[in-house]
Length: 260
Image (cartoon, rainbow, N blue to C red):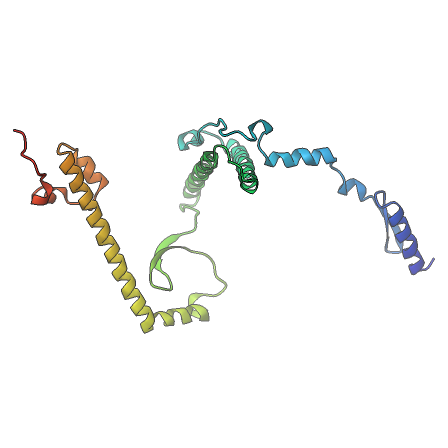
């Protein structure tokens, strides 16, 4: 049998019964591969059941409020084992995917998403869990190697000479051989960047001054209405305000005769 005749026969067999086998020519031998078992291992009802995991329980559909618990706290997560944290992470991940799916469907169908605060509680729980895992990894690396094992961070100026937090990472070239990095450093020395930086700092100083004035006026207003207010608590809430200095000013005193 020629090669083309074999291909025609194999094509007819494949078309007639594609769910049973497929014949291919491999090293002058005919090999049968059962593809139906691998491609159709799941039943239709199994697929439907797995897809319904992305949706909430049917009894909660159309409800205005769904009863739920609180988020996981850091002390509760710190006493759990690594295996329990691993399982809890995937439980929270599945819950988050389900809530996001329900939120999308409610928006698409113009319906009210019941108890949207559940998303916030799941997010807080996942953040707390990630914090606990980072604490354990940091403690382990410090004990074994004397380092944290995390990417080092520092505050450095960016392209516009604005301070920002930078996390170190590996580059294929060092800084002195990277032409793009060198060109960016030269551009910063131009006059347009200096003018931008001067105006940016001016706006930053104005914003900080306005914030200090708002805090000072808020403290004056509170002390006028409540002369017996705890000044230590007020100083902790507004650390930029000098309360003892404000007490000496006439603006601080209210328009009334103090009771003796």
